[in-house]
Image (spheres, rainbow, N blue to C red):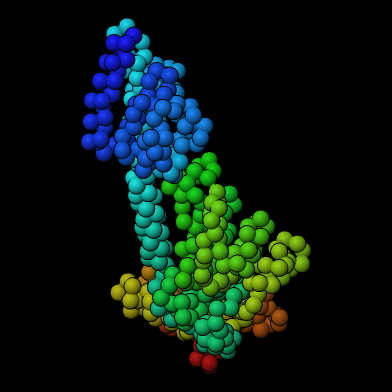
Length: 461
Ligand SMILES: Nc1ncnc2c1ncn2[C@@H]1O[C@H](COP(=O)(O)OP(=O)(O)OP(=O)(O)O)[C@@H](O)[C@H]1O
Ligand SMILES: [Mg+2]
């Protein structure tokens, strides 16, 4: 017994010399968990003075809160080598490995535990993932900006209504007040929202355009507000920046705002009021600074009256309301828009197309249910599909454009309607064939009748 004690003492003495030379944290205990030796750096990581630790058991130290859990206790219990993370009394994160040492009879003698401080590593990892997040945010902003049509496109505003709207925009652009654009689809709400942004002091910041109806309802919240990593099933491993956060420093356009579910309306209201957002699954509030523009082709006020849209939110959005009437109610814009879009198509496709006055007239009298968007599509399509440089009425791609007066809604006097209808046919035929003989043949009437009608409808104008 005495010899055994002596050997042990010798052993520990040698240990001391080795331990003092070490920079790592080491703790040696006997088979009952009593601390025999610790390395000098142990105090820095665990906050336990060497003199205090030696002689106590790891069970005492665990209970006093110096580390949790005690790995040595587990090794004593299992007799096996263990590795595990530990949080120390000094808020250090460490990885500890404890190894049992047995004597020749296989009886546990010592446990040697070795820990490595990974606090800095984890902090670095945090910084790294924050940087990664930032890069992701910038990349997304850049992509978003790239997708958007050039902001320099001119807004055609020949009608008094549109000129007035542009004047209003010019006046309010610089104030940060919320703007609500109302009007049917394709009248130019999105375009005008961009114009506001362009003329505001935020023009160097991003312009983020979100169509609330285009994003599935179950994704809308995470798209708008973002989420922290692992906050819900299906959430990405890295978390995601919300679109509202992306609008920081710039303008946020929420299009088709009437489609925002009531639950998100409450969240948006809070965001507008407090200018902060909280990502899904997150706890910290993130400051966001943006100018809010909303747009809707529904009667938002009626929605609010009927309880389908929060009234308090409606009042917040409706600080400046700009109504854009349908194209048919501002006919003065039609021809300038046609000229604008044909010039664009000519440039884009290297063409030299112009519209025949008769074709222009048809375009002017059409009802344009799809407003400017429809007009722009039709002009571009016709530019590509028509033959020759002059686009005639019969080259227009809609039945209603080729025979405008046939539209029953326009008829209020039968004789005049019949004459309009006949006049269009005669004019088209004369433009195509150029003389009464051919017009007569084409329309199945005598040359004399054709001549009379040409005189009446074409030459008499
Ligand atoms: N006054 C205008 N001058 C030139 N182009 C215009 C004008 N108004 C609209 N446009 C063009 O017409 C198209 C449709 O406009 P925009 O997308 O702004 O309509 P919207 O009202 O936002 O439609 P929606 O309700 O479907 O969102 C766009 O290509 C836009 O550039
Ligand atoms: Mg739009």
